[in-house]
Image 1: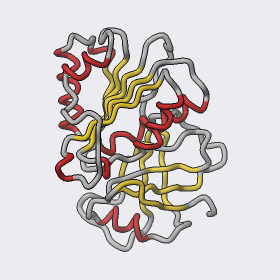
Image 2: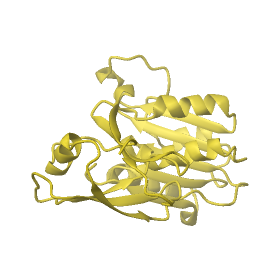
Image 3: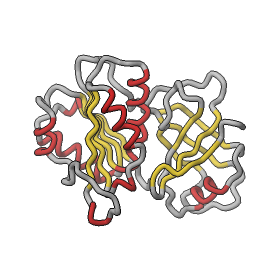
Image 4: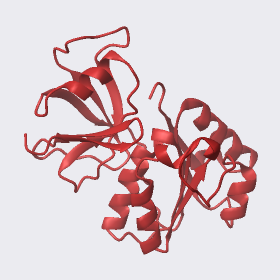
Amino acid sequence: MPDDKREEVAEGTLAFHFEKPVGWMFKPGQYIDMTLLAPSETDAEGNIRSFSIASTPREPTIMITPRMRDTAFKRELKRMPLGSLVKIEGPLGSFTLHNNSSRPAVFLAGGIGITPFRSMIVDAAGKALARRIMLFYSNRRPEDAVFFEELREIGSEKKSYQIIGVMTEMEKSKLSWNGETDYIDNAMLARLIPDMSVPIYYTAGPPAMVAAMQKTLVSAKVNEDDIRSEDFPGY
């Protein structure tokens, strides 16, 4: 399968590209269930995982970007030969960009929770959609920030897109950083969002981060109908 490949996209994070079946379509923000077929090892977590699709519908492959925890599934995924067959079910989910372009989208991403937003932002930029998008992307260090440079470049080219990196443990980094270093909270959002009642909010990442963002938004009087979330347990 000529489209299959894997590559490191951040420390401890690999991107896996799978050949897209002919005619297979999805919406940016959706996910798949992937089953490993006849793996050489397994464990109590089993042979099925859910992954957000990090690629866009117009890109030639289905790309997933898991953090490489030491589990049987991910060891097998990392070592299996390129061209190996896997079972994919989907696309699944409704974590997709709203249709009303008059309302900005505010994305709140933690760690590998960036994957559905990478698909949404790259797709919207490629289509030159006339809408306002703000991404708040929190990581411990720049070394952990998957797709950040790609997304920051899009933000520098398209003035209606604002990409805000947040690094919370820079004392553990070997790189320099002159952006935000506090956790995403009401003060940061109020400082950077002119009217917090206007956007539709999307949050994705570890369950604790998603819960904290929901609580932050509700405490800022954001309508709960305007908050959409997806958590990534165990990833």
